[in-house]
Length: 151
Image (cartoon, helix red, strand yellow):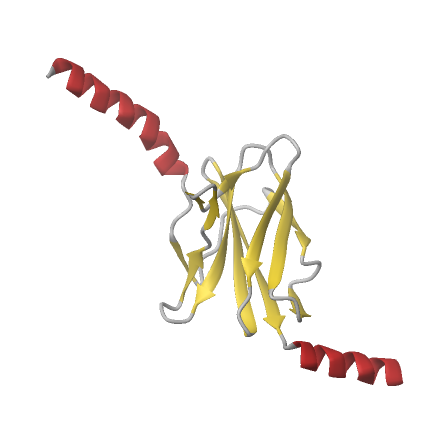
């Protein structure tokens, strides 16, 4: 019995610090961080962009050791939901920025407006940044290109 209690206490000591640093599963639409110094968005290159590619790579230069996650707006809940990715069948929904200072996450876009929130946390410092990526059909992109080239 004593060994069981010690094992449970050891597991709690290992797991609790990671749980405290974990980004929340949902973030409200008005949620703001308390700092601006944890990361700089590298891609997409503007706050609002349009593409005909169904995936978008969100990348950032971040502070080493900060935990980062990407959220996608969920209209059914009216909140941002954390994007989950799987590597070797293991769920990974946030990453710690390494010594390179680079962070990247692939986002699968839906047709129309995609509201994205990038979240970073280091200790008690939290930074958020909102992005908008509009996915248009290839046909629309081709028509736009023809219009621009015709001028």
